[in-house]
Image 1 (cartoon, rainbow, N blue to C red):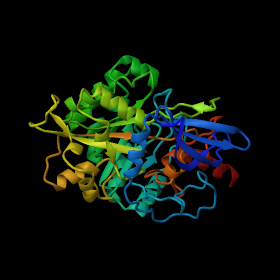
Image 2 (image 1 turned 90 degrees about the vertical axis):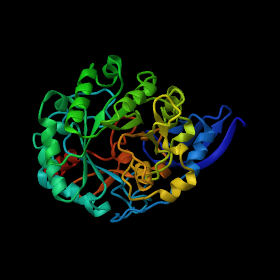
Image 3 (image 1 turned 30 degrees about the vertical axis):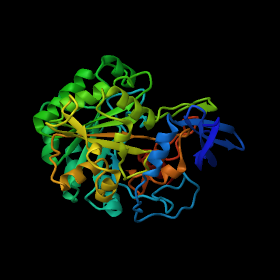
Image 4 (image 1 turned 90 degrees about the horizontal axis):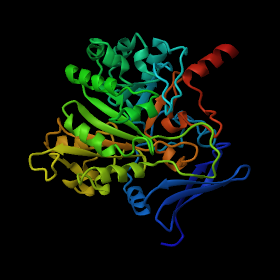
Length: 442
């Protein structure tokens, strides 16, 4: 490999002005993938994108056919402005979020939502409008995640869940830090009674130090109680890990083993390298990517996983959403008693069985179920790569399948919605700020 091997071109952003720029993606002499672009006003920026060029190219080559979104709006502004979802967008949403509050009972240092206290919550009519956005975009058979802020700060959360179920949505998940669930006996039972189908629990490690870094204080005992509440209620939980280099990236193997040992209640492990926001002064940026998480997870899995056991999920760009389903089997050669489903099928069989209607993260599950293979005590492992102003590849952005709904009818790609420039300014104000602006200015 030469000192600079061209891989492909794409679009990238200037972190200062967020202008879309032509960018070159290349591999250096060590096989590390970089993305370089030059802004006429702010100069050149080079971002590390992936730890291994061969792995990067392999994943890119395994892209699935795209199902375009319905009910798009005109593309009247350059990417990433004008989202809603615009006519440039190449994939429909498969996981849609509704921010039911901007309030939170924690102030986590790594929170991408920058949750605040004292914000006005959306009304039930506005939430109904956001549910309708999802119904119009993808129907009511997709996955809806209620998020924030911290959704359990709302006293009427069970009514919000019931509203969604009454509108025909079969799957409603709450994204939570677990504090209220853990500390209030009977609370989760009320949510389940209203129709809750899953808990998406932030779970950043198995040591107090991990939570002191990501949440500002040790709440490991809270997380364990929240998981036990889910077990008692018979509702599945997905453990969502914000992977931060130097903080908890050495716990990936232990987190995997913990999830496998608790697969009676833990249905999934979602690993998400933390992405940056706010003020940075850098011309050569080295964020953590999904590739780093994939390689780290496999190295720490004690032989259970190889890097090519983790495949694109098909619902989004192959560099953004990857995963594997681990089957419990008496014949598993690994001491854990689990085997990766990707060792039991070829990529061609996977592509033939793939359904674009599978909810995000359920592709393997649905294929195995159709084959009559028991999956109830297996574990989904998902690695999700969010992008910020430094790592934003606009080709990948237009393939985004994770959307945030707002009351005015827009469904905005997740990475656009949370995007900030180098000074921390957002393109898309949270719905509550937009509502205040409309109120103040008529």
